[in-house]
Image (cartoon, rainbow, N blue to C red; front, side, top):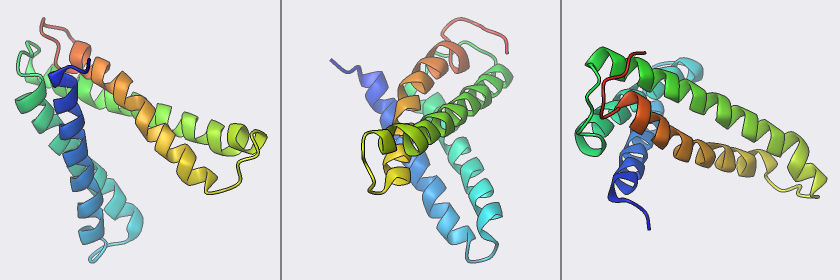
Length: 135
């Protein structure tokens, strides 16, 4: 059974992803692609933090500065996971399995999905811990 908290985490993440994606498109009207991606990622991360703090992990006992620090660290770990999984799948596993159809897209989809679970637990027990924890 999936907990309500995890479902709300998925909703918050989906909204943050939409902010990230949508703002990149809008920002690209006024700036180059890479700076637009970086700013959009930051907007998505701020959105995710606010939604998670307000809607998902209301019982957080950490000081705000510790919540922010842990949130950034957990997200950095998620990016590393995403890159590692995406590269292993796209460059090694999928070709070995004979898959030769949108390997990078398939690998990236899996790479993005896997850190959802680890990020949830990282945010639950570190970023928004119900007992005080320092970064």
